[in-house]
Length: 205
Image (cartoon, rainbow, N blue to C red; front, side, top):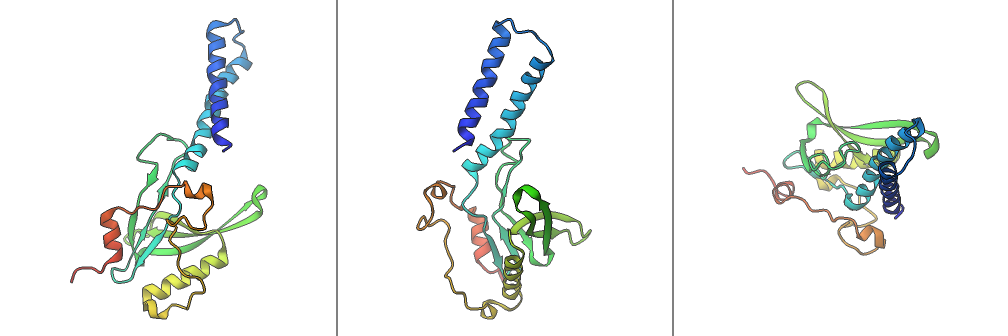
């Protein structure tokens, strides 16, 4: 709600400044040159945040398929430099072998964001070189990440009968019930048909 007016304001200021420079009598000193350079940079820096608000999906679910020993990730990618690239923006579902996935804890000290931040990521490595080829966000909280990772390992190693009894039923994030009006505007989760079918079924015998 703030980004769109800000984007329009910076765009208007940029066009107005260029119009004055072309049709007016402003001196071409160092301050004018800096203004010419900074306004397009500010415009370019603001556009990704507006686009993120418009195209980020409601959720980025991860599916665990025990029979195939694979995980399927509804991964949303974006790039703040290539802001109009279709290849670098959008949902790119991927599938990885379970044996190649590990959980990692990232500790970052951010003074303006609450101090110490502990995120849990899922890292995917190349089994031949041990090189990490992808990292996927898992949770914002260390203890929640430990619990979720333990549940995922129980399911993949022992099956659904090993899981604890959950207090809350699973939620379909495509259901508008209980969501805020702004959240309901976010794009719904829509798996590609082939990955959706594969992630829900057993491998052929």
